[in-house]
Length: 127
Image 1 (cartoon, helix red, strand yellow):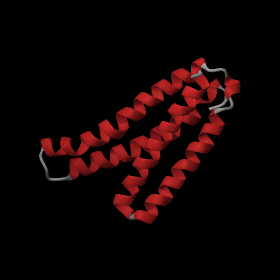
Image 2 (tube, rainbow, N blue to C red):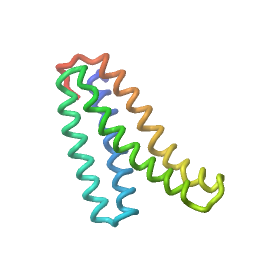
Image 3 (tube, one colour):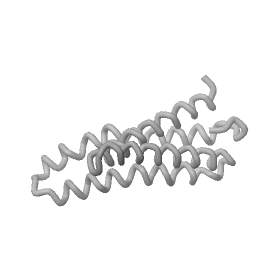
Image 4 (cartoon, one colour):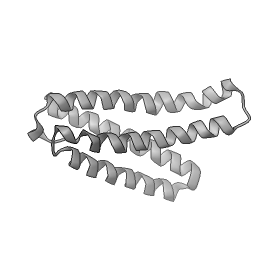
């Protein structure tokens, strides 16, 4: 596969992870309708940011900001609930590890690969 196709596949994986996590997080907090609405917002922001990032290699900030925003908000919410609960450190880690292993770490790894592929792919190929 070409670098452009690899880059598109990695970007698709990142967007899917973001959609799932933000939708799940909002659904737990506010209900299914708000979770679906949040997933739509994440999809729109990700699409617009990808289009803006397409303008050139120096526009990587348009990729990083929404990815970090949609990764940091659920992580901070989970950390806040873990620290404010009256459970012990082991229970707190048990609650936090699935988010880290199933979402935060894959997002960080995929983002690093995407940024490296972006450097190696000609700008004309698009995101």
